[in-house]
Image (cartoon, rainbow, N blue to C red; front, side, top):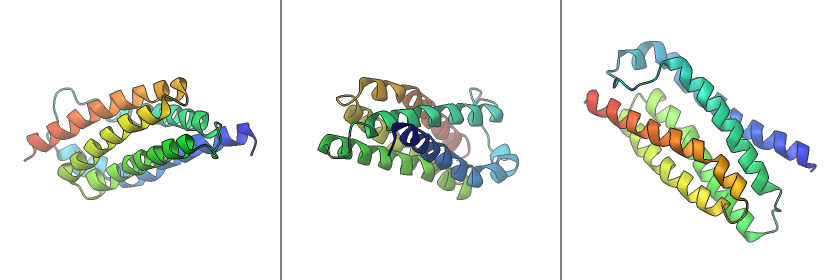
Length: 157
């Protein structure tokens, strides 16, 4: 597969993860989410889509940079498995938090996601420091989102 197709595929995979997750989110924002008590540092709703679209782009480029190292290499296959796990956990947050309307399940998931992102960065770094660094904004945003999720849980318990 040509590298340009791999790049497009990697980016689309990540962006589609967000799009499918949004199916659980969008209908609950004006209803359930709007009724929740939120901390003063909670950003306006429009910020989330903008940030996530950018983060999925960076994740896709990061994925591509590892993928082109070659699937025959054991380290690459292991790194991609870690990436797949974090991407699955990323997707699951929306159905748990918004779909199930559970800030507790969301918090459990996002905590696992945070750990998974750290492990993915650690696996990516020896293969491509650029790929690892491209995941740092994602790590920072999910760290913030974890604090936000915890705050929502505490304010609404």
